[in-house]
Length: 231
Image (cartoon, rainbow, N blue to C red):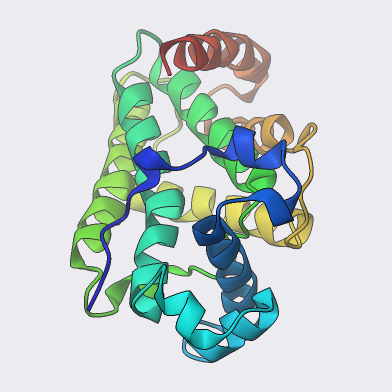
């Protein structure tokens, strides 16, 4: 038995950050504790009893909100995959160079994960192969495909140095993941300069002319502003 993700009807991250955790809706409290435990113990090393105990409720009470651990994981995927995949699709269609759109994608990804009140570190790619997560697996592959397309476009336009788009995608993900792993720690915090630092570091390595990174950063700032205004 599983539950469909329903993030549209729930508070967004900005709203959650403004509230003490005990005032969050119970479903978000469950997601928060589950995400932290998945990051510490892994999905398969965490039971619904563990989640209920961490939250200070009885296991049957948890089932009033989520019928299974898989249902919790599905809602976490809506945050971890659904929101970023929609964002990169918007960025891919923005009026800007491929390098500026890629810079914006990296910066916004890191900001989103670092400022999320829910810990994203317990959702590695191999977990998405779990039975029942097929639709999220497709969304993840679509996300990857959009990033590869941005890299390919940048190479074809001569902005980015020749590189295999999948290798570039893996390198981007590897750096982002390490920044998030080291910086997040499950704490509620502001991202500070980390999103910009990460995007600058990665684009300097990908650009055909690394000296253009400041120009790309300024163009990306306009893309990010347009994204925020549109969403």
